[in-house]
Amino acid sequence: MENKLFEKKIGDVLVVGGGISGIQASLDLATAGFKVYLVEKSPTIGGKMAQLDKTFPTNDCSMCIESPKFLECSRHPNIEILTMTEVASVQGQAGDFTVTLEKRPRYVDEDKCTGCTSCAEYCPVTIPDPFNQNISRNKAVHMYFAQAIPLTPYIDEKCIFLEEEKCTICLGICKNDALDFNQAPQKISLNVGAVVLSLGMDTFDPAIKNDYGYGIMENVVTGLDYERLLCATGPYEGEILRVSDKKHPRRIAWIHCVGSRRVTEGHNSYCSEG
Image (cartoon, rainbow, N blue to C red; front, side, top):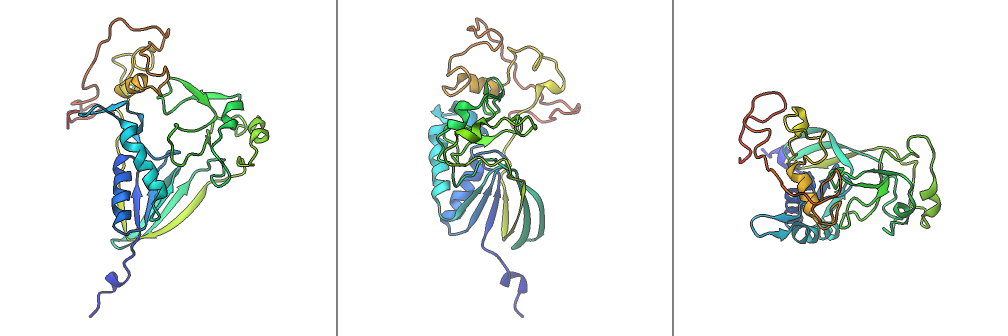
């Protein structure tokens, strides 16, 4: 008797998470002949690696390693990139999954936008820049970072147009009519044969139990904050400055393993080495 389950198997694959592991998984699967949907909740693929200045052990620029893979993904005929998108539900079984995705509005039409960034140049509203760990500020409409894929700006939810104060400067600036404040959240249904979870990592928030003044004292930073301070594309263009007064620090103290090997709420019981 024939196995009906195997008759119904579907060749498409959903990769959840657009960091370096999700990118590489997508490229490997797509090259093997599978249709891949690469889903990322941020405005661009890249993940935490995109925020690093250098990588261990070779000390290579992280973008020198990762950004060529961005382009490979965007140009590969078997990969469809869905940014600003999250998984809402998964139903089914191995070989036949129905996945519902929720895609947030970018408020910029990717097909019409040329990436000229004129909208960002004239935008009067500044917000904390998430790519630079909120150390610096950026425009309410901006490119997430220079090598972003898709290379299309997005409009942050803090834009005063979205808050009903109705600033329309960017609408008048865009010559391609690419800005669309009428965009609404979308639900997308996919039928895939396999789901690859590549969810990456998140940094520990020292403000959970504030033993060290993070979030209170401006000059207390995390390792990822410091990576952005080191980077030439960071808030101070690679110059090491104190956040409080923009002067060079004379002494720096490093505290390792914050949040590790503690069983209290919000902390991690395991060692940060593992």
